[in-house]
Structures are given as structure tokens and as C-alpha cells.
Length: 63
Image (tube, rainbow, N blue to C red; front, side):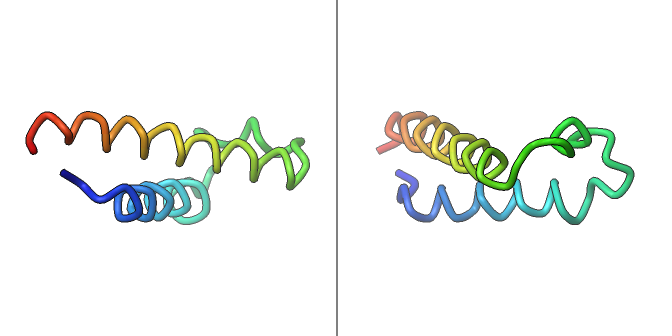
């Protein structure tokens, strides 16, 4: 089983890298330009939590 904290950390790093490092021309995340910082933070925390729960639940199969 993947530890939930490790899963959340890995997902947060990947999302952060995708938004601020790899998306140079803002084709994937450009629609967030007009959002406020609290709204962006809420979205990214929600994405991280959703995928952490999913990743942990899927890994339970292999315990």
C-alpha cells in the first residue's frame, strides 16, 4: 500500500511542476489566469486530495 502522505506529496509535486515548470505557453492551465489566489489554492488542494484518496484506495488492492 502506498502511504497516503507519500502519495499526496508526490501528486502535489507533479501538479506543481506541471503548472509552474512545464506549462510555459499556458495551454493547459491558461484558463486559471483570471482566478484569485485563494481559488487557485482551493483547486490545487482539491486535486491533490482527490488523487491522493484515489491512489491510496487503488493501492489497497495490493496489500
